Each structure stands twice: as structure tokens, then as C-alpha cells.
Length: 276
Image (cartoon, rainbow, N blue to C red; front, top):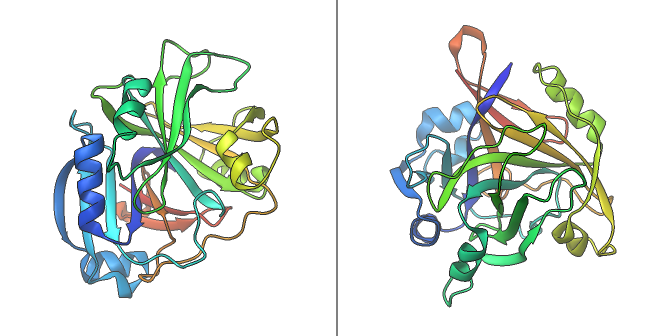
């Protein structure tokens, strides 16, 4: 059974560059920098990752959800938002407009692919977000929430760029993806239709196309969003260290047998790490 989000693992071609990007531009603080090692690599089932450099970072506020970066080379076919699996990590921020100004500066390693805009939801106009691509080709949604949202228990930012709170999953079949989480004791919410401009752009769709999505509520003010990806999306390729390219693994706290961490594969091919 899954309880709440713990963190995310991203495969990046140059660990030092990625750590510097998150530290200097998003204010994330390196917790540990080391080598993955045999134990972790064997647990993941990818022994070739044992010698990879790895770093764990957390928000400046000290909130516990982590971003774990591991060095590996992407498959040449990998492109942001073109593959099923973990499509984006959503982070709560204090002021998305000021953050956009910051990330537009010369030398920024985060490319803005969707400028700040109020999200296209029928039930609220209090969520404003932008989308960026980071040094590993990972997509981040940087989101400001201005007030209470009916039906959602969202966190408040505790630093300029605060903690991870939503993971976005791209799936060819929302129902099949949601069924996996139902086996984990989590029911999906109602179907929502909304514009996702960055997704439409990548797949050559009309700007006014409304994509189908649903959400899954976890504990500790964390969520999953499951998006129906266009038929032009493909399976996520593997990196040189055997982990999926880009956003590779999402870690959850949950109930596991014998109190030992587990790896599971979800309905859209996504990798989950379940921690006791």
C-alpha cells in the first residue's frame, strides 16, 4: 500500500552540472554526493549502475522530499513529454512570476517551455504554473497556489522553490494506469479535461485540445496526476545505466512485506520505489 510521496530519481548525463543547476538556480541543497554502490544497483535490478555518481538534494526549507540525481547517458531517442511513464515532477513555489524572471537569465540551465499561466481547470483559477526542461531533459512543473482549492489539500511553499508535491504520469490508458494504484489502496478521482499546452505542442496537436486526466490523492499533501498521452507517444527508453531516461523512479512511503523496500512497475511502465 502506498502512503505518500518520498522523492524522485532523475538520470542525468553530467551529475556535477545537474547538482549545480538545482543548487544555484532552484536553491536545492545537496544532502549527499557519492557512488550508487552495489547494494542500491542490485536492489534496482541494474548492476551496471553500481559505479554511477549519485546525489540527493532537498529544498532550502529542509522539507524531506528529495530529488535524487544519478549519472547516466540517455538513449538518443529520449525527448521530454514524448514517452509514457513519469512525465513531470511538480514542485510548489512561492512566486512563479519572479521565478520565471530568474530562470530567463543568461546561463539558466532550465529552459522555459510553458510560461507562467493560470491552469485550465473548470473548478479553480487559483493555480498558476510554468513548465521547464532541466539539464537531464526532465520536465518540472513549477506551481504557485493562491488559496484553498475545493477537494484538494495542497501544501504551502516553505521556501522560494519548495517541495515536490505531485508526480505526473503519462499513460496510453488512464483506466489501466489507475487500476494499478487501486491495487495499492488508492482510488482515482473523477475524469477531468484540461488544456496542457506543452503536451499539445510536443505532439503537434491543436492548442485548444483538452486532454483527459485524473488525480490520485496520497497522504501528506501529495498527489499523482495521470494524463492520457497522445497515441504519438512511445515507451520510455532506458539509459546507459539501465534505468528509464529522464524522470526514472518515483519513491513512495508505504507498507511493504518484511519492512523492506520494494521496486514495482506500474500500468504505464513507470518504476516505483516503495520505502518502509
